[in-house]
Image 1 (tube, rainbow, N blue to C red):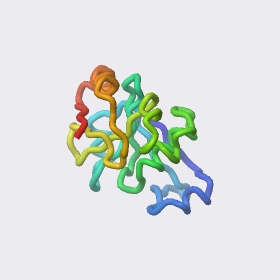
Image 2: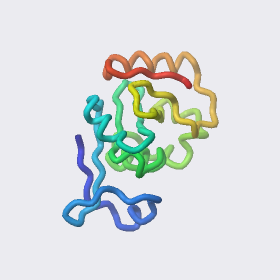
Image 3: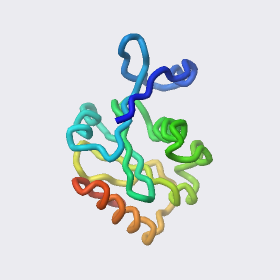
Image 4: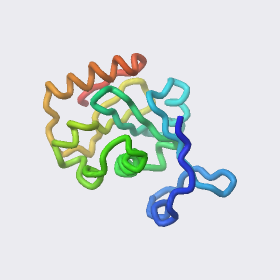
Length: 145
């Protein structure tokens, strides 16, 4: 788990919802390849949003209901886990899928690609994501829809 603290105030203020506060500091918790307990912590509210890298690494942020995928992409780019070049176009740029895939679930262990995508995901590339995701995260499954 990575605890992110002290976001730039203007970035936090731009969020529709504010992150967790603790000791008057804003923070999100970022989980890499989350356990079922960490997923449950993130899914207390509604939808769990995540990002899967092509190598199968999986990232979620808690509280998940406070952010949208755009925020998650921004957080991971700030951490240098992904590049910044797709922040504002990941859902419309097919090249973004060569680096990461945005996913969501409604509190289960079955993840689907994010509804925001307005591009077609190449089946062969999606299969590669499925295989790598399962290797890194055997408790979870990945589906197109």
